[in-house]
Length: 450
Image (cartoon, rainbow, N blue to C red; front, side, top):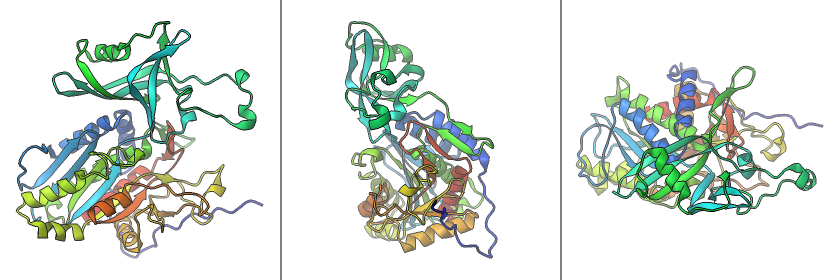
């Protein structure tokens, strides 16, 4: 006997007329462009900065003295960006409304000595980043992207977005046990991609190739942060094009929605009457613990918010008052109910795609949401006219986590974990509903506007 589906309830109906949504399917079209332009965290923050610049934001250097001027500003550090808008009426103790997200995704990253090979095949030595579904990287055409550090101290982004590498799977004829025992992959032996032919391993060959691709002189690159990406572009999927398939939705979907929401809040006619200072904080290294100078467990967000208070003439007391009334929505993807594995989900919480964002709850604090946080998110969704769903993990399975609990504990600010429900999380190519990205963006905008 099959188990009936129990979709999570949406936000309760209200008699108040909701604000009409400002984002529609055009937002999802732009998400496709954002995903395609952002094969690495460094590209993602550059893409976000470009959109914010068009909304009137300008970059401030961490090494400069900050002033107390109003308007939109942002800080870039590696693969992280923190952006904020100070309205005309802001005081030194005006609290913040923060949308938190992360820019990194599991993938294969180039090692310090990348040139390797065997038996006439030339290969690239890679290290596994985060927790990818390794099988999803097999027999897939891969490009190479990331950041180059140059001899003169500058850096440059690189994106070789064509079929350059491939991790070939062993033919079924040589391993028929995959049908009975399942596919078993050794991270060291089985995941090194091929990229050419040759019996001699030539040290420095890959980096020389990258230098040529970028028009750089030989030896100009002295450091690199390079990673693979699938070159298959994001695309609408399904009979009615109501699904979206693409790479790095975990968690560039949230970075894109947060960027769009912040830009919209800052350019609204009543932007200078905002009761809060809206903020986007998109961190790197969430997939491996967030402990870095650009991760959520580092000081970046707290430093930026504190410096903003002091630049506006505030004191430690003003900072404490501002933080005490600050709220962060930690937006990350979650798990939609899987039609082939419904038993792996909680039996009464089955988030579905295109039913609105999810509120993520775990009483053991793997997510930071509590009852008060739910009320904040419910109010934002109600204002935006957006339904939402609840997600909890099956009690018999461990629960994942996000930047939410880290942000709450490190900065002492109320944090709520939310996101969009997807399938195939941590695959080289994930799947979501085509309407959920703009539903999330509308909820984030309502939250930032207070």
